Image 1 (cartoon, rainbow, N blue to C red):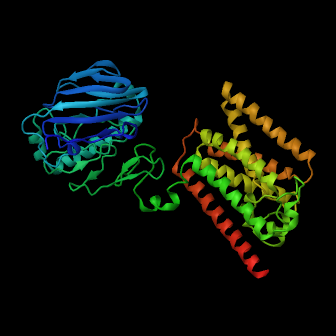
Image 2 (tube, rainbow, N blue to C red):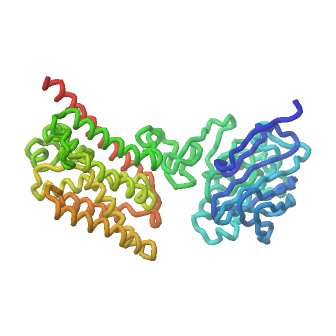
Image 3 (tube, one colour):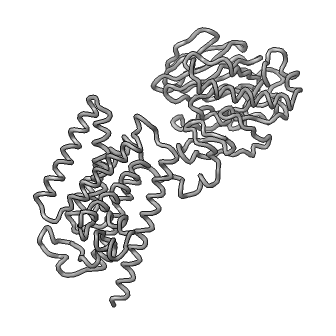
Length: 486
């Protein structure tokens, strides 16, 4: 066959992709470089023999060539001589570039190289102007340089092979170029020398025993041997305990919102089945499809009696998924369907889970301290989300923050007015939920101040695990009651 064909999804490309093996390239060195918005190489590189051509496919950015900065936009093509210093940076719309180069005679020197020409020369001391003065970048480049020099001592013959123009081993592997602040130069290891991950400088065996995995925190591709995730800074992302199912994350935002609503609906139906009575079919809007007090107590309604007399502390978690009637669950789930995605947008999914869970528990604890004998419902959790949004709006300020604070403040005022006008509403749980939500919003931080960390994920998954255990115990109680009451 006189051709080879492969397909790449531009939307999901990593920093650097080499199609050498997919296309069985023999005479053309080719790389796909995709830089995230406002990110770029952290050091420059050059080549001994390879002439490169950069063709901009999408986005815009900058190309540093020696001491000149070239503006790049879609459709531009730039040829760069081998000896020229070069580095790329994306603008706000990101940058997708095809880098092509001719293959000089004698390359690749290493037949197992991931790239067809392995003559790149990195200069870790040469930081591009967009990162000038950045101590973190300088430190990271210094670690890469130090580790490469240590390898050079172990394999002195590579200095002779590199020739007088190479201040360091000529090349290193960039298979794992996913760091949002690391160079994406087309480089790879010569001869039998070990390959290195330029993201963290970790040694990679010649047989590629260092495998790729998704960072358990930011879910971006990293090497299993990395000491730190280059994207979020998580230490030892390849540690087995960090990659178990419990800490793999709760899934996508839409899935989690749907799951919480689904669990509430399931528990509501279960409470109806356990204590079904003709009164459930009453035409009164307040009594229609209302579970019995007995079934709700069995499944985990909370308050002074369940907590202080029956020692049912697990009910602090289970009660947030029980409801006293069709209108009760309908209003709560509609409110959560609106507020949940907004909290996820401003705080992140993991922090939303923590706010929802601990805010509910905090609201129920306050209502218990206030002497409420029985209470249940997702209102305390929803009020916790309201409290967190009120803190966010007040803290952020500006047009958006003030508008959000005003809008959510209207929600809070409406809830309290409803509670005072309608009997049987637990205002203590509502107020406690808002108070805990605002406090957690301050302690956990929001995205504009602090991105979500692995600790947030651990806390969120702990809340999920504890809630699932409480609900499992609740369901077992319900099943046992059905069988024993026959």
